Image 1 (cartoon, one colour):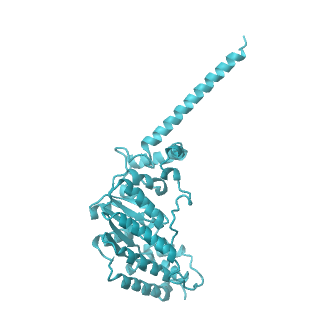
Image 2 (spheres, rainbow, N blue to C red):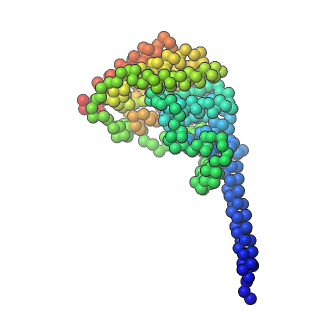
Image 3 (cartoon, rainbow, N blue to C red):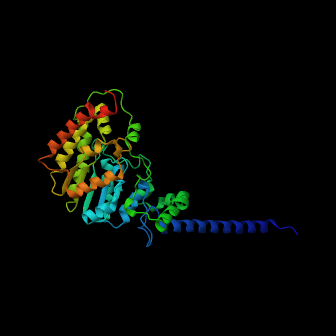
Length: 360
């Protein structure tokens, strides 16, 4: 007996209905799993029994600032990723997490600070100032550099890019669970990249593309407009939050970095920018500034580095330790002489120290 067209249509409709229901059920289950475990911490802090597994700063940093429990921040570029948060917890009696942006531009870092202040009162901000950040564009770069803006905005309607993401479900979530439940993952090492990296002079020199010719030195005021804008961003944060102690610091880039700054004609502007920023920030009672760019025991030893900027975790600990002891603190009375010594040291690096590795 042949089926009628009507019967066939009814069966097709039932099949389609079951297919749609099962598909919707599957999508709902996926959304629920991602939202409940939330490996990017978009909706909440870790569930009880799970650790704060932080390895993808562009995807996780914004959620941690909104939802984690903390009263202090470690703020900066990639050179800050290898600090262990617990060092600061113990040394300063606080609970610190990281607010990291690889480029370290002032506008980007101040954006992260503003997100944190929306829901938290901060005791300390440990803020690394990269020299390049003082001459960077004063507009944020998250969108222009391809960051996942569906995590940064507050529009739940575009969260499908997160909750229906195959990589999140199949890779990020299992990774988070594995590190939470297996092994000895240290939550203080959030975003740490130093493991399995080599730090020695051969690596550092091998990754240094030295300019063949020395360019004409730029005027020290070459970045005046951008500098003023970035100083304004920093001082605005300090002014808005007098209850917070801001501990700004300048990290020890290697002598290769100073050689490059000189050969690129940027050295004079770099030091001028730093002087101007330091002078402006020192006007505030809730500001402390620490300077380690001139730490000869660190910057002249290329075994501390993997390239001209990035140093080992041991150096991160040394910087933390010096901040905790109050070593290298700048004051209105000494900052100009310290920066002048840095100028003289950079001359010596170019004229003498670098010649141990490069012919004149």
